[in-house]
Length: 96
Picture (cartoon, helix red, strand yellow):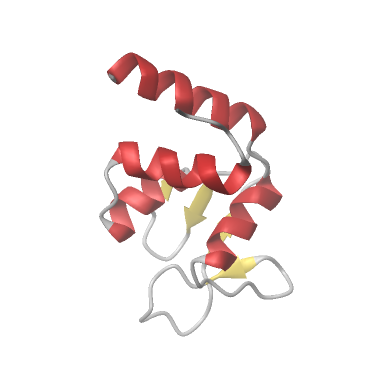
């Protein structure tokens, strides 16, 4: 399973764009301002997180940095397997 998971994540990352990451984040409830920033943490008064050109996420308020898989794992308690399947479904990558 480990090898299959790594292959799936690699395949997803090859297809994943910044716009895909923003779309996924918007779908799960994050709101982006005009400059592309959003509140990663509910207690923030001003948005301090953004999606980088390569599709990673950086929260300047807390220093957190990672990809969409790590965000789903760290903030939503998804397993890495479930995070990979969720993102695969969002971008249309077959994993069965």
